[in-house]
Length: 372
Image (cartoon, rainbow, N blue to C red; front, top):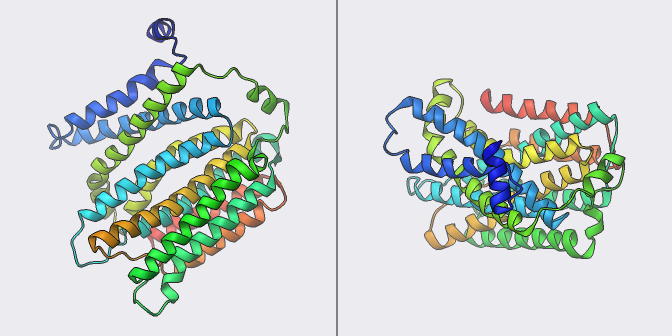
């Protein structure tokens, strides 16, 4: 507490001291990781540091989001994490054996979409329903996000299985570039609607006094905002690099448990999505479901709408092969999840049952991944 007060007075930073220390500690642990990589206990320490780095990232993202306002704040978090997620996928793809089509991008994107649609949105609806019985949001904005997500998901993850140019869920080079361009057009159109043409669709409605008081909280000063933005980037980079560093350990644990290798992608995607998930959950607990949905659906769109084009560019210039088509079981789960979310959010009001249904689908997705 004394350290926190000293920092606040000396540098005029309205930031808890632990949110400043954790990202820096995460970077230091990465530097030391090669020296202690033979020690099993150090992996446990890295795991703890990873969790606190995620919590710090959530706090700094909220500071920046509060400064710039909705919906730009949620876009900042979604884009920052997606850019780093793409970097992680591309770096891992480059290290895979040549001559074998990579499924890493497919598994990661599919895991991210399913976690967001059924896990994050499900827990937000459940938490909000338990506390407030019903919650309101502006359905025009959610509908815009959902129809864009449906189009990109079907075109990139299911369509490859139905084309005849290539086998095994692969796009040909021209098809991959075409789908990448379409994905960018769809995502760019959504960003335009969200930030310019229909920005009011994505602003939190004043559904309660809690929301009104939340909106009138004093905004952070410029120095605090810039510091939070820098620390957010550091924390997100640390989260992804620590996830990559811990992935062999996680993979060995998964294999020892007898689970398929694709489950590793779920674990890594979960860690990467934790900042957005926690921020969305905290917003739902404060009766700000619009902010939760902006975060969740915006993250899903950024994840698939930017990852696929990035992977396409890498494959085009490096000659790498990638498989994007998901199997029949995954296709059913994806379509069912999209359909259920669309029905749940079609009225502009939510209740506890919708959260229960989505979390049931999330449990089904996890179970059928482990026990295919």
